[in-house]
Every structure is written in C-alpha cells, then in structure tokens.
Image (cartoon, rainbow, N blue to C red; front, top):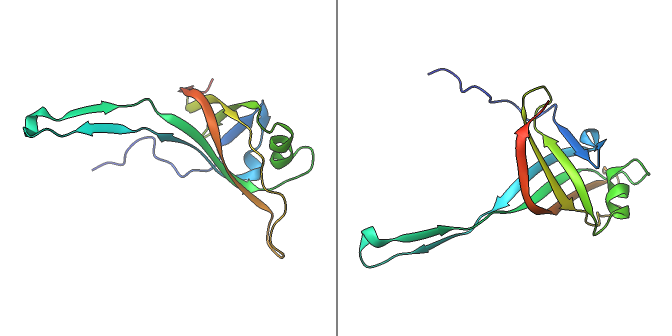
Length: 136
C-alpha cells in the first residue's frame, strides 16, 4: 500500500495572533472540538436515534512563558478577557490547510520552578466556529 498523501510531522507551522507570529514561542498549538452526541436506544435495535450537537472549540497552546512586551504571555495578559484573532497553519506553504478563528485571551501563568524553563499551558475558548481554508 502506498503512503497516504498529506501526512507530515507537525513542525514548520504558523500561529498568528492578532497578525503577529508566535510560532517560535510555542510547542503545542491545536484546535480541539467538544461535540456531544445524544443517543436514545430503543427496545428495537433498528429504532436507535442519534443527534450530533454543534462543536464547541478550544485552542490549546503550550510553550515558553515569555513576559517581555513581544512575548505571548505578556500579550495574553494584556488582552485578558478580550477577543484575539488567530490563524493556525499546521504546515507553512501555499495551498495548505489553515484555520482562522477568534478566541478569548486568558491569563497565563507567571513564574515557575527553579532550574526549569518558564512555560505556559492554556486552553483558550473559541468564539463560534473556525473557518477552515487554504493558505494563499
């Protein structure tokens, strides 16, 4: 069997937040859907009913906690509770998949453990639905 086209290692990505690139500060960037499914099982196996709800999305990020003005932690702290515009492109290049969406900035951690990198992990709530497309 031949290899599936489009498979790749997740690197050389792009994460734009309010039109600024933060890829060099992140180790994880992914959209995660929460999409409940309601199932009603009847006594007759052919009578099972299912309803799939609209997904609610979060944008999960982790990486370096950079607290200077150009750092993502400082930017999120300043925007706490406000919407930020995000473009996620898992692989940089023309004609490749992108997701554009609005998320609500949350307060990142500040500080860490002695002798370790300052890091942050956040799950930002996404407003509405992402728009999936391709890069120009």
